[in-house]
Length: 323
Image (tube, rainbow, N blue to C red; front, side, top):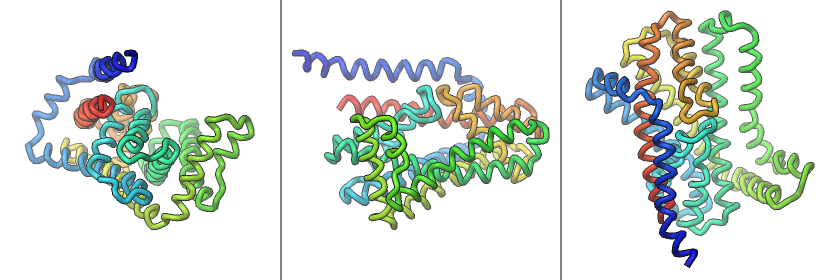
């Protein structure tokens, strides 16, 4: 009886939670301003932006698919793409630096392909490590752009130290992958110094499986790295197109510096980086003599895409949990 009641209540609870997440995200979203900005665009510009956004998530999903398919040859790509969009929706609308929806990836692999919790988790670990690897490469490039653009001369040495610390933090993914390839598991070793409980054993097993993937499927690993870099470059290309669409006059390095400021803003633990993203663009572009109105125009276009994709992701997430 209890199981029956839970099965009946679960869809309602799921959609109620997702609706609450969507409400809190949209409550402060400038929907009217977003609509007015979109109305100023030509139809082909909207199509290009939509196409670029779709390409980014195809590439992101392809990275995960390459990892999973190395062990499970019968895994279909399109369902993984839908799951990855659902992950974005949950992560975008919850507190945290763009994480939170990853359990959906594990749940999908368990339900549809019978993968163990540990093995499914190991694919997600590799997926996130490769995502952070691409982010690290772009961040180094972006910090170079910030230095070239002369922002640090206005911000002071304190900002340089803070961003230097961030570089060291994001250096962990490539180092971690290299260590796992050589059969060294730093996370497991660190955790076992404090405890050897069930959770630590689970982390150790997942890390070892990820290391096994690195050694046994080097071709898939390298392919996933290339795809991850293409996805990151597509994000950068999308930002360049938005700047060009809004007729904002920026140099190559200034555009990359503005993108980097926005990327760092999404690390702030608030849903969708609300407020932080807008502030980053106003500040960085203001350093280049761009008006706050133009800076906000960029954020409105980015918000329009993210809210649409995130909303679709929440719907997919709700249907997935309901099944």
